[in-house]
Image 1: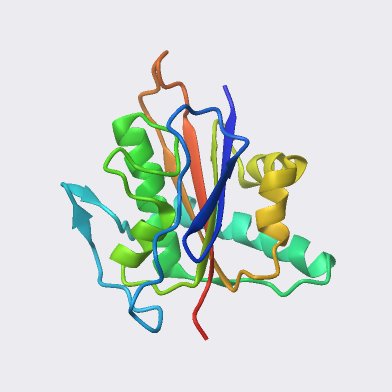
Image 2: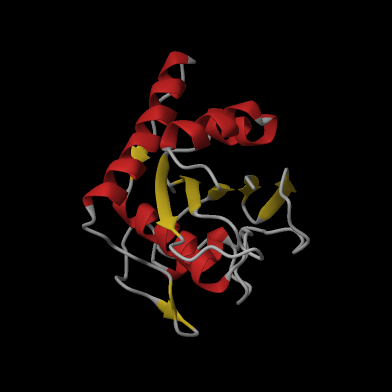
Length: 194
């Protein structure tokens, strides 16, 4: 089974579309008070990390390939490439891993944290946040093509308001009938404060 999800928000307003989920709408939180991207390191809420740095070459290669696909596509459309932020990737990766560990597919975690909340908890400042999620796509090319085929996901990829991005990938080594998703992807988009 393959699934897609999108969240796009501007200053706290959110839009949910294209998800196979009954969890309701995710939303971006209020603008954080920090003025720049300044990660706090490994942040933890309720025993669940919100940042997950990695040195795994396979994970890093998959994530970098998806960012490259998105940026190459953006440039081909006359848009600026997005800055690839390792801090945003660490937060996105933690969300993908959390999805695997707790068997959920949604923008908002079971603890109630939205993408904007997760970024803010990591000390990442933003004025606007969007997120694409996917489950079941085995390669960066496959998930990229699925997102492009979905108008709402493509809208996030093509938005000229974003300045930074980060991709997080996780593998479920024990998929089940209830949660058959082996590959989980999170791509966060943000507009950094000026």
